[in-house]
Length: 289
Image (cartoon, rainbow, N blue to C red; front, top):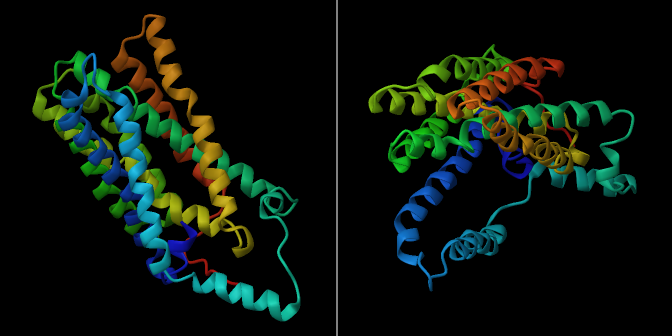
C-alpha cells in the first residue's frame, strides 16, 4: 500500500486507493471462475481435488520476481533515506516504533477499525455461497456480480473520499448503504432482485475497503508507513476471523442463515460507520520524509 500510494499526488491518493483495493476483488472473482471451470475436472477418487488449487493459488506470487525490478522505489522513502544519511541517523526496528507513546493510540484505533472492516467483509462473503446453494441459485453468477460491484464501488468511494466527505464520510456512507441493502441481498426474492442486491452490496458494504489503503497509510509517519498499516490490517483480519464461526454458531442455535448474515452485516456495518470517526480525518495529508 505505501509503495503504491507514495507514488501518487496527494489529491489523487483516494482514487488510487480505490483502484488498489479493487484489485483484491478481481482476484476473488478470478478464483471463483477458475474453481467453477476446473474443479469438476480434477475431483474424484484419484484426482488432486482441492490440493491442486493450493498450488494454483501460489503461482501468482512468482509474478513478484518480474514486477519488483521494474517498480521504482518510493520517492518519499528515498528522500527519508537521504535525510537520515545526512543526519547520520538510522531508524530503529519499526515494529516497536508503532507501540511507542506517540503512535500506540493510532495503532490500536486502526487495528480495531480494520477488525470492523473485516467483520463486515466476512459477514457478507463467507457464508454467501452457502446461502445461494440453499436458495437453489447458481453461485458463480452472483459471486461475479458481488465482486464486480465491489470493484466499481471501491473506485467510487475512493473518489468520494477526495471530496468534502473525506475518508470518514466515504466509509460511513458506504457502510450505511450496505446495511440498507441487506433485505434484497439475503431476502427471499426473485433471481433478478437478488442479483441487483449482490451488485449493490458489493458496491457499498464490500467496497468500503476502497478508502482503507489511503486512510491507513495517511495515519502513520514515513518511518513506519509499511509496518503500521501492515500490522493494523492483519490485526484486523485476526479480529474479524471470528465472524464466520459466529454466523455458524447462530445457525446452531436455530437462527436461519439469512437472519444470521443480516444481523452480522448490520452490526459490523454500523460498527465501521462509528469507529471511523474515532480517528482524525486524513484527506489532504502530505507524505513528508
